[in-house]
Image (cartoon, rainbow, N blue to C red; front, side, top):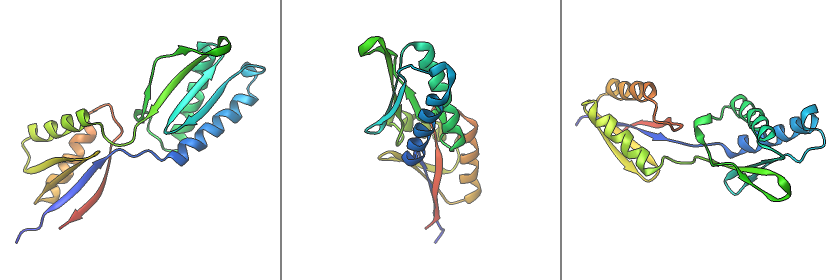
Length: 165
């Protein structure tokens, strides 16, 4: 009997690293001259981030600091979904940043369609927030991974659970 090989396409974000990046951002904001005496705050709310500052310029500057810290900690910026900037109490502005965990169903369908359109001898199936790709030949699975990495789906993707059944 031929062996079946498979791997999973997942999107995981390490929240410990995100929290560490938030703490580093707040430390740098408290030490920077352009933020002296201003109300700037970056915090984790449930599984999302909330950024608030006195004006949009300071918010944008704080966001740049945060993005630098996230990249240094190995968190992809594709995992962040920025909502619109909205006014908050006390003349400040705030912005909700959703952190992606799992592949959204519409993106999963797009990934499966892409794999099927490549006409490789593999099967792709959506399993919750992951996409499982299976096939007989390991080289074909590696071709699928290479093609998925070359194509930008606008989400952070990792490939794990590579196994032979």
